[in-house]
Amino acid sequence: MSLAIELQAPTAEDGMSVYELVQNCPPLDTNSAYCNLLQCSHFADTSVAAALHGDDGESQLVGFISGYILPGKPDTLFIWQVAVSDKARGQGLASKMIQHILQRPNCAQVRFIETTITESNGASWALFERAAKSLNTELNRSVMFEKQQHFKGEHDTEMLVRIGPFSR
Image (cartoon, rainbow, N blue to C red; front, side):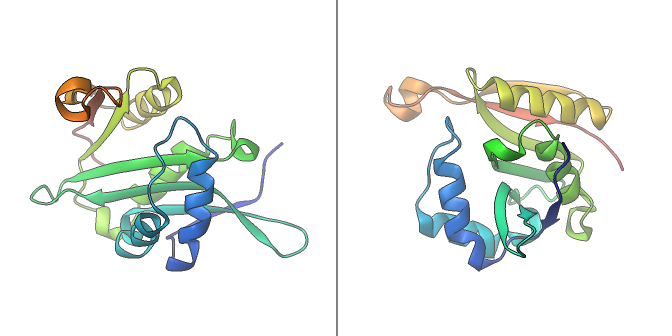
């Protein structure tokens, strides 16, 4: 079944819905509601909200990607977090959201995508491997934040994933 989902830049009003969505998408790290509010306002041009519209005219946030252009690297989009609710999984929504961001005018210079993923997050690895394939480029990985050195053993090692270069 295909769902009627609209992709758009998030607004500040989406902040609490993003917070709730991320809480319901383990193994994602939950940020503060204020952090999600800032993602939706400060990084709206490089983030995306996916809203499922019901027959009653109400909409529900079912997907969100937060991202930003890396300071000092105008050709690199860093994807901070990808969240898709249970009801919208299996539709390729996360891939569509990445493409939606890349098609925006403010991403015209982007030739690389970076993100971090823990080794155990199979869904994220599959998503970014598909992204590299669809962009006809390679995916490279290296340690960015190590479990003991950076997290004092409290969080798994975050691997830096770099996709690119690519052109559109």
